[in-house]
Image 1: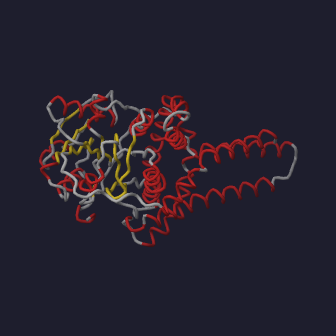
Image 2: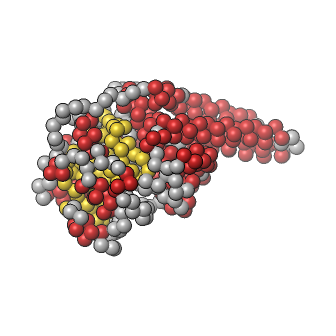
Length: 414
């Protein structure tokens, strides 16, 4: 029982140390105001990029939403990397007006490799005279003023700028809703206060702009882990390169609706976090005690999931259970404590979900009943990260694409 008590104390202490500052973030998220967008800014030229693998069903809607921007079309070029496609994604993209490259490589699989190939093709062909490179997934749809508002936020002090990620299909079911709330939490409870306090925002795979000097510095895109976005984020923190967050620039993303698909995707995320933690973790720990050390601390706290600490409590409870059985001690005190802890965790996650739902209420495209109902199931979804986190430690994970099929009209997001 002594070992179980020590584990609980360590877990609780680490949790408090790593997440206490998030309370300040929540307060800032509720009461803080980001600076208004600039007025009278000059028009800049942008490249909008998407890497697509068999995305013929949704890619045309992304391109349509780019063409429907309030920003002048002559300042926007669209590029598509048809990556290992077995359908007519390349043809459809060309017909829609995109500049298309094709890539076939069964060894180097993943978005990072596709992006690197695309950037190198663009540089070789002279497509390098841009003020910024927007990166989107094929299933995304941009709000009509997305690029206009990003241009009004533009500042060369940033290495990258990310927009506000909302969901196309919040109300499909409890899984898509939970994904949606997860991203809303990242946008509103993390990136929003980071921008206000002058910290470094994160990117989450899509909906962000990279400055051209960063692409030139990298000679393409040199991040190839299972979470290349998180790897890029970590590299920027280590180089004191700040990522900005523009809450006014909204885009929409399709979320998985099947649990098996969700499990596969989140397994990749978790394994990718572990890869980045292994490669960048020591340097980030060292970075904590130097310039912009809080950026590194914030990132490390995000890469080490809270559920890993919760798992320590589960181990402690299991050890105590075994000890009580062996020594014929009553089990009821332990079972009551487990129930209380479970309810506390559930309540805490529910409150976080409710806070972010209320803060982003107007942006969530879903009926009121769904916004309220799916907050009840959000903690259940988050709890499934526990077995995923454990399995990711031991399982070999490869990059598998997520099938997108929710082809929404651009008009629905105006």
